Length: 226
Image (cartoon, helix red, strand yellow):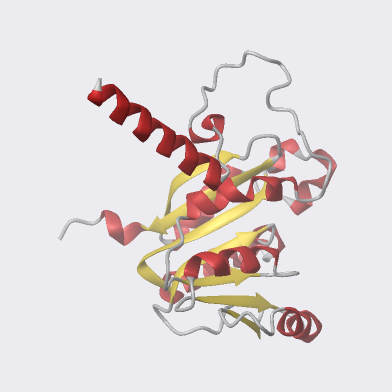
């Protein structure tokens, strides 16, 4: 009886933790068997439907206190604001943008959020020191990089991101977009470019209810035995 009570308590704690993270059981593990012709249909008509899955995405990123994150093309700072809560007072979110107007807007918006550091960067590099970041994050930005410059940009990130750090790419799946394919990147293309630059995809999947995917990359050197 005591063991049953302990099991029930542990089960309740797990359910509570999963609920707090906003991760449903189908997002933790979901069979690829198609039981409903509409199960992969887009469920949100907004331009950023994956934002509704932010808790799931943040759980995938597994950010921790003291982490240094590079938010490439931070935009309105939507992700920077959420990631700042996870890195804590000792962490940093470098919110990178390519125009002074956007940087000034971010500085004004997050004047009281000390972790977020908006700054002006170029289109072909980050301007950050070597081995200074734990995570480089692209949200609907990777497809904006010049196609012939993506491999070089990822090579640059090999230097900026720590040897044990990661790159995360969230983008539209090109094959599902049709006429909007220019604002998307196929997974095969991303994987090929990443591998050429010294990165290995360790996890990638479609974000349920969207036409977007999340891909997490680590450096190839981690797989070397010395």
